[in-house]
Structures are given as C-alpha cells and as structure tokens.
Image 1 (spheres, rainbow, N blue to C red):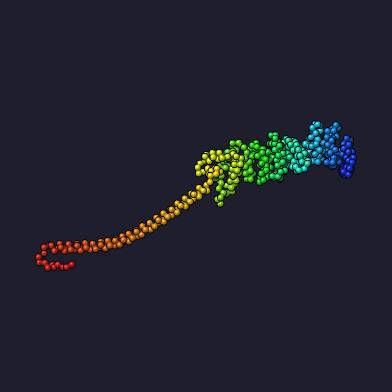
Image 2 (cartoon, rainbow, N blue to C red; image 1 turned 135 degrees about the vertical axis):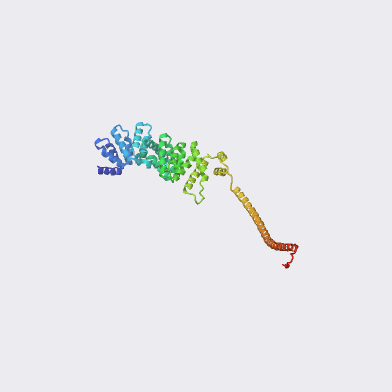
Length: 419
C-alpha cells in the first residue's frame, strides 16, 4: 500500500489537469478504498488540502470525518484553507468543522508557522491577512490549552521563546502585542503569567523584554513578582529585574513601602571600601534598582522627596540621599569645610610653634635659674661651713673667757696656754 500511495503522489504531481487528484477525492466516498485514498492525500499535503477542505461538512459523515483526519495529518500546510473556511460566516457548519480540525492539529506542528505569520513582513501584500489569521488562531489555541496542565501547554511557551530570542526587534513587539491580546480574559492571563514566571527562571540574566510585558499587564502581576522576589532560589539578576518592575508599577502601599525600604538601606552598602563583601554589593544592586524604578515611575516626585527628607534624621544617610536627589550639592560645602579645617590647622600649627618657642625659652630660664641656684647653694654651703667654724671658735673663746674669769688657785703653777 505505501508503494501504491507513493506512485499515486508522483502521478498527481505530474498531472497538470489534476484529474488524478479529483479521482482520489472521489475515492473517499468508496468505503473499501477510503483508507488508501486518505494515506495518499495526506502525502500530497497542500496539493490535497485545497480540495479536501470542501468535504469537511459533506453530507456523508464518513467522508467528512475522513476529510477531518486528512487535514489534521497534513497540519501546517492546511492552515490557510482552514482559515478561509473558518472565516465563512455564511456557513456555520463549515466554520465549526474548520475550527474543530484546527483544534485537533497538534500544537508542535503549527506553532512555528503561526508565529511566522504573526511576524510577517508588513511590506508584503498578504501580510495583513497572515497576521489576522495568526492572531485569531493563536487566540483559539491558547484558550483551548488553558484547560490543560501547565506542562502540556505549548503555544504560550513558544511565543515567549520567540520573544526571548528576538529581543527588541519589531517582530518581537508583535508577539508581545499578541500576548497582550491573549490576556484579555482572566483565565488566559493567569496561564500567561505562569509561563512568564517559568521563562524568567529559565533565562534570569536576560529578561528585559519580558519585564516590559509584565509592566503592560498591570498591577495584577504584583503577587507573582513578590513570590519571585522573596524566593530563596531566585538569582540576583532576576531579583534586580523584579525590583525594577515592582518599583515602576502602581503597586499596593505595602509593596511601595518595601521598595522604599530598599532605597533607605542605600547608606549601609558602602562598596568603596576594599573590605566590603559580596553581600554588600548585591544589596546595593537591589537598592539602586528600587531607587531607579521609584524615580522613573514618578512615585518619588519632588514633594515626596521633600517629605522623606523632612522625616529623616538630620545627618542620617537617608537625609543625605534625599538632599542629593533634591539638588543639594555637598561638594562645595565639603570643600568649604575642608578649607576652614586647613586654615584652622595652619593657625593651630603657628600657635603650636609659638608655644614651643615659649616653652624652650622657659626651659632656658629654668636652666639658668637652676644653675644660679646650684651656685648659690654652693655658696650657702661654704657660708654654713664658715659659720660652723666661727661658732666653734666662739665657743672655744667663751670657754677661755670663763676660765680667765675664775679666781686663781693658790699655790698653783698652772699657766695659761695659748690655744
């Protein structure tokens, strides 16, 4: 049977009149030969799709079912014909049949084609039709997949992968626009958000475009972003992006206060010191992201900064930060203080030199006085010694006088001797 099918495919493709193809299509009405005709028509792909599409709502339900199965197996080449049938508003039965066939085509067979249609070159004449088809069919597929388990959904992850790969290109912006259209219902928005969170963890270092998409989704993404921020498994790069996005959102008061806390901690992350650790640097990254987001979003406007400055303690890091943000320049003040300190230092140095000179003079005076005192002390010693000798002489003389004043002893031969 495969050999016969292959021969028929070659025959159809060589038959310019398409009579062989017509005969194959007619064979679908013959139950005994229907399976072989189906196999051949599937092999013919797009060549067969243009004819088989006419049978999707045939009165013979077996033929209509055979057409359904053929177009499902043909897959991507059948999309343009299914789109035409789906757009036939005058024939509801045919429209529903085309939609059911599309739903039965596996996502893996059509996702790349739908994305390529979505990003079709606008300079080409059929671009508008391709984009319309892609948006409509994408919406159908995403809504259908929303009822499946997250791991079984394929269309949204494919779109996100494309956005991630294309970055800021125009085609990526169209894909983002389609995702925004897909989030018009709460059910699809929840699914898209879950896939975005998965994508964020998949590529934590390159999330600029997806973060822009989150901003466009509004404050409803706040809870998911907070879960990412507070998770211990979130890498630094992703936490920084999440803080930037939360700071830009019109978030709840609790989230705004948390972002303000990151800003308030800026003064405790000095990384200019060679001893600063990695943790300080990481915390500083997060604090700066929060500050940038709050400023960019307008939440930190002039009045808010004035209020924060007034509420902070004078001389605190927060007060200094808000002052700088309000345009207060500290360099001139620091320079003026430095000049005053230098002048004071020079004055104190001159005073010190004068005091030292006076001290040296006093030391010399003390030295002279000590020398003079030593000299006088020596003189006093000599005088005291002389005085002692004189006292001894006086005492001797007084004794001699006493002797002389006594009456002389009779018959005594004692003679006075000169001392």
